Image (cartoon, helix red, strand yellow):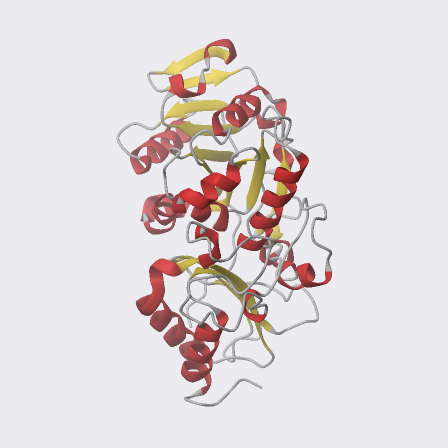
Length: 386
C-alpha cells in the first residue's frame, strides 16, 4: 500500500461556485472588502464582472490588483493551470504580496468538478496547492426553481463543503425553510450559511478541508462529518440548518409501492411531489457506510476501480476514513467523480472508534447498489461484512 503521510504545507484552495444570479458576485464583493480576507489571493474570470473599481487600491500587473482588505485579486489568463503557476511563482519571487490561501471563482454555469480535477491531477499544482473545499451560493428566493430546472445547480450544491444561502432578506421565510430542507437532503454534511447582501464572516467559509489550520494537523472528524448522515433522522423537519444534517436516503421510500428502484426518484420525502420530473435533486443519494472490521487494501482498491468504471460520473463526492489490514494507522481517501486524491495515512486515529467510514454523495447510484459491490469485491462474492 502506498499512502503518503499527511502534510498541510501546501496552500489551501477554495472553489467558489454558484448558479447565475445566485449572488456569487455580491458575495465576492463583500469578501473583498472584509479585512479577514487579508493574505488571500482571489482568482476570477473578469475584473469587470465583480466590479472592483471602488475597491481597487493598486494594480500589481496586467491581471492583478491589490485590494484595500489586503488580499490580491487576479484574472484567469490562458487557463487555470497557467494562472495558478504564475501566481505561485510571483509569490515565491516576492513580486506580489504573500498570501496563505487561494479562492477560485467559477462561471455561473460551471461544473466545479473539472477545477477540482485540475488541482488534483496537475503535478506542479498538486505539489503546491491542496483543495480546501467547495463553496456554493444558492439564491434563497429562486434557488428551488433553479434546482428544478438546472442540473448544474444541483451538482454545485451536492459537491459543496459550505453552502451560502443568499438573498435571505428578500425571500419569504417559507421559501427559505423549504429550500434549506432540500439542500440538507442533497448534501447532509454541508452547513447552510444564510447571507443578506453577501455579508458572511470569511472564517465560516474556509478551512473546510482535512487540515485544521489551528492545530496544523488533520481533523478528520470535522472534515468527514459522517454523523450528519445519521442525525437528520432524529431531528424535526424545518429546524435551523446552519449545522450538520443527514439522512440515509436508502431507507425512506415513502412515495408508494408502485414506484420501483429504477424510477429515478429519491428514497426520501421532503414535503414535495415526487412525480415532478423536473426535480433533479430527486436523483441525488447521500449516505454513509460503516464497516466494523479492518478491510484489505487491495480489495478496497478493486472496489473503487470497479465503482469508478461502472458509475464514475455519478460519484459526485466520496470521502472515507479507512481501517486497513496492512496498517495500524488510518488512511483517508477523497474523490470527486472518477478522480481521487492520493490516499493519506494519518499519524494517529482521531478517536477510539476505529471503524471504516465511507461517505457517498451520488447521482442515481444508491447504497443498495454500492454496498453489495463493496461486499463482493472486498470480502469475496456473497460474503457480507460482519
